[in-house]
Length: 340
Image (tube, rainbow, N blue to C red; front, side, top):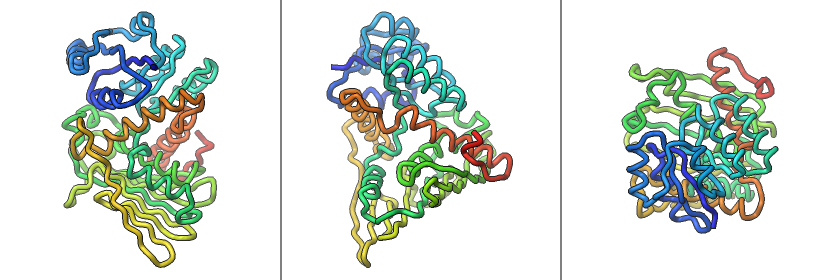
């Protein structure tokens, strides 16, 4: 049984803790947060007696196999490097790092230590999205040549996470990073990025609309389309809608978790709705289920001694697209990913 510690008991940690209770082969035995109220609340809720205000103290005092870092990006590099120095594996929330320099430093440290670092990039692990990824990878529509991935919503994400309204960066860094990662999983890595952003909501500091054109290494193209300023009924939050064209057919993930496969003049429709787990609630249930799925993959990867699909090294490619999109929007030009 793998022994794990949580670093960070804030907004999203309850989802992690509930999900870890479902994962065979691992248990959370220690909890760390600098806020005593959050630490007490989560520790009491999940029956975790070992509680720390200092991550180094937790790592020194507990015999841990891994840590799950659920903090904001500025803390990730020091916490990851601390954990690696204590010879434990790491699963770390996104955004993986504030800068590519920090992300690359973490990946180097992990490789030198021979440990595993997985980024909690959970959108590609949502079961409806995963069904689409598996179908495309299995050749259901032949070789894909175009993809559109859209996340358009008017949902108030600021009420639960008010800090999102404060930063100069918003939708690409917080939401678009997920959608970019889905497109990478479907269509492969990217060579060029062209992005346009806008701010519709005057109460926030960052961009809340982004449209990004991606040119992939294979020569195909994708469009990533994100908005938190869209008003429509029904509200589709937090669904990512997908459209993929292949040389043998097309595949759609439509609102309401309806997947359509168009091949040979026929349409197959499937309901790929995620389950509402006992501790989950709508409309967050697809995200909440994906937390358990990604944690299960992390444990299985450790058992097999293989790199997780969303390893730190892999996530460098997604983080590069985020940086390229911001530079493209600011400089009003196409960015080669090799520039970064």
